[in-house]
Amino acid sequence: MPLFKIDYDKCNKDGLCVLDCPAKIIEMKNEGPCLIKGAEKFCIRCGHCVAICPTGAFHLETNPPDACLPIQNDLILTPEQAEQFLRSRRSIRVYKKQPVPKDRFEKALSIACCAPTGSNKQPVKWLVFDKKKDVKDIASRVIDWMKFILEKDPQRASIMHIDKLINQWNMGIDRICRDAPQLVFAYASNGFGSAAADCHTALAYLELALPVFGLGSCWAGYVLYAATQWPELSEKLGLPGNHTCHGALMVGIPKTKYARAPKRNDPDVTYFAG
Image: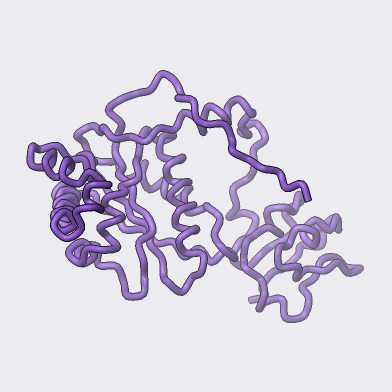
């Protein structure tokens, strides 16, 4: 099957696909857009050519027009809506004691998978723990790691206030996973140079998508620290060889609602003067 095909009856020869192709592998000829020689080798299957064609004439092998989400102008956010949407997102640390509805979570996850990745490699993989006993077990393994740090590296433990976290754990207060019903890990093969950035971007997309479905999240920083340093936790995750975990989120149904968005610092920006 060819990499792409054109419905020349629909094509208006506006050249938008040629202009917008990131790999610059499309050229305009008398009959319309065509692939340059050797284009298959350089195409990243990003779908820009299909997305930008106003007539639906462009068909990419991996991205036909009918498989793409139509852009509805009436759903485009206004600046005010976008500001409220982005500024109102909160890190959720208090959850209802009920499992995460799988259908809602997976819909949010499918949106997160639309996050941009380096050269459209899409290397991000997901590991989900959705049983309370497993989340609790992960938290306990993080506590074991903290006890090790407290003994072997007291200065580091002091900076991280590890003694307080351990004491609270012993009192039944979970500051590690916040009694969240679900943990989500993003990981990727070390063979991808942009793996860390790709995972971080996908997790950011997931964080933004979850509230739309009545869910909330918070980065599980202590879990991530331990996952890269504590064999007992690495064993629990069971990631394939040559793969690295780049982020973890606690996920659940928020127990609280917020009435306002707190102020944050203004941009600390410098414009290069030349």
